[in-house]
Image 1 (cartoon, helix red, strand yellow):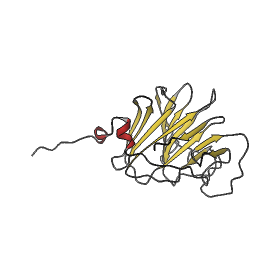
Image 2 (cartoon, rainbow, N blue to C red):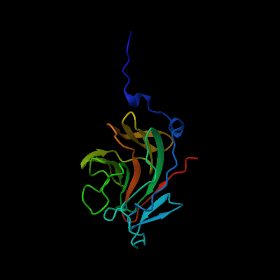
Image 3 (cartoon, rainbow, N blue to C red):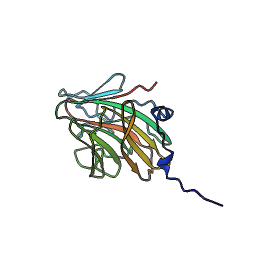
Image 4 (cartoon, one colour):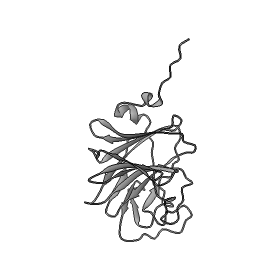
Length: 199
């Protein structure tokens, strides 16, 4: 008998059409949104604004970091895309997190990518990096403002792609996920992120 050991990411989709078969519909959760974030487009777009929003108190709301999570917790295989726009100096974070991430204050336990409960791709006009548990991995600047995220929860892989005419891999994580993952975003002032409709 011959046993083949296949690395999980070898089975990862190759083309955008391959990825789209795992596309999922996501919505931003207003109960998690920092009051400096404006949700629009049916809770599919988030913008960091000066005017504080009148969101009610909620135990799941981020009250320090300018962040928001999606309603949907993901396991299995999932794919989604987000398009970001920014000011000259602003940044956006495209992330996933366990639901148990802390929400109150500006400590590392609340920041997406700054603890062991979250993973985040941080993009700005001039740089790109991946953060997990306060550790930074510097990456090439994405050629596109549209980012695709592919999660294979069972295989423990999380992959970020720059989406244009082709899929350009930016970073891949290989780990063990122990809980459902909630997509989320960190948004600097003057920047916005929109969940793309993948039909």
